[in-house]
Image (cartoon, rainbow over all chains, first blue to last red; front, side):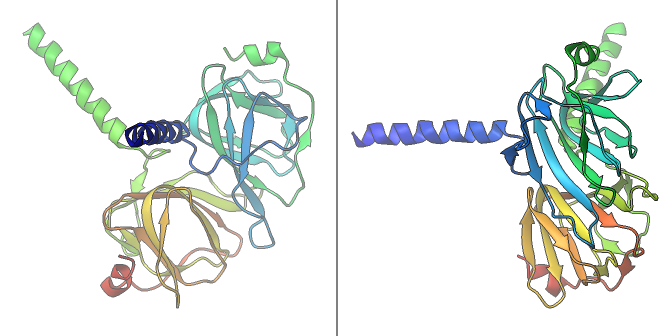
Length: 152
Length: 152
């Protein structure tokens, strides 16, 4: 009996370690997006700071399951995306989809309508740095299948 | 002869791939710190953006070899450090050294005298987000061995 418990403990430990190894996000994954109406698929968002009068920008980690994507949106103050994992898509209105990878940096200017998401076959993570003085993200329409598939 | 060249190409490719695999930094490592008088050891700094009127903060990746450390310094606008790799030390004046790890976030308030560096046995990397409106970093004195070793 003791031997069986020992075996179970060992198996559980091995499985847990494997699960940890698979979660490669830099910071705890945080909650699955609270606002359920501005994305499709599974996206975990983790706010890394609290903007205030000294720090007028938000820092956040986003982790996307393969195929997950945000709706079209606008940042009134712009945004930097520092891509930390995987392969994703980024598109500004009127331009083709860009395929982007770990190590790439995206500068999105204030007021530019755009969307981003994971490619179909890869998780995708970034740290977003977003000026907060000009107001919150403006959410627009869903990304269509045609728009998304143009990145393939 | 052709066979020998083929073998050399294969060996070189394998060695190059290994070297790349060993460099685990998220973004290209960039140059070794240009200002040679504000740190000890080996530190690679990579500026990830160019602050401007829209983006009033700098984003930079720093990679420290084991034991490398910055001098005591002050950020007039404060700084966030998002630790992305390894184990390091962080100390504010008058407080004990904190041992910090991948996944930790340090908020350093404006005007606070402090230093940070890698622990003796680990590389150490972070992404720093630094407000730029209140001016540049003010460099102070070297970290003494006694101060550094108090983190062990």
